[in-house]
Length: 392
Ligand SMILES: *Cc1c(COP(=O)(O)O)cnc(C)c1O
Image (tube, rainbow, N blue to C red; front, side, top):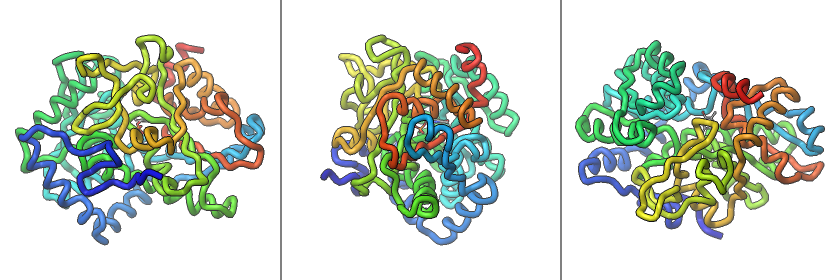
């Protein structure tokens, strides 16, 4: 079996690494040298755990979904990341990175955001710590995601528009990188998923691994067994999935199921199904699988859910898929919407559209009656009501 542990250079097998411009070298190597030392420090751990408990609201419940289980004739448990402060798992990572930034002596935070969810999670922890916060966001996304822009501003962040290229996430990322090159000493760049140059994928996965750490003891309590037969999560960059599977990667009896966004379908040019449409290449400093054209230019992805509308996947997921450790399903907009409506009616939980992609798997393959299935409920759907209602 392939080894899915990261090596010193930041590779999961052949995927990962840090392919960065010379000018970022100092920032990245400083982070590479420091992150594990800081994260393993007892004082860091104490602060991180305290905030996860008292501010984020952890541990989040592991909930046995009785009606959903009856409907699909299997045993379904939901990991309730939707109950985290700000409504999704993203805050687990930003809490970790803001404490890390303080330990590194940084006084200024930058981040990129597409839909604004990571921007809000970053602005939130900057407000919490009283640290200056600048969020780069594509001009087009600023228009499309007005409520999140208002949230970030109310939280005290400055939202800077990226006006180049397609005026979306990748352009915001370019602006953030430019800023970091210009401000290497006082600034920390908070990346929002398990993507980017090493050490980001590993660092973010470790912050999110609190999810599977909790699932393990919660499952023992409820079923007597530490692992489920199947664990299911949606994948944009891959951070909620990485957190949900982190402690199960070496557990061969636990089947990993990843759900990516097929958009309007994998045979249309409106899709974000990276595992099918993508090929090996470098995106945001990492060697992974991404959607690109013949010349290696990144293809504009599409999904109804802004959080899955990303043209790549993190290197860990690329390795898991390449090594066939994970089963992947591509879920269309329509399938996700249907799953979102169904969960709302059967369990009284309105999921984020991203999360709804994970639930759509229940219609795509069957599970045995006695099998334990854990679905990572990555976020709540309040932000998506307009889209849900428009497709009623
Ligand atoms: C951002 C987001 C995702 C996708 O990001 P990952 O890094 O793949 O987890 C999934 N679900 C929700 C609720 C999100 O906000």
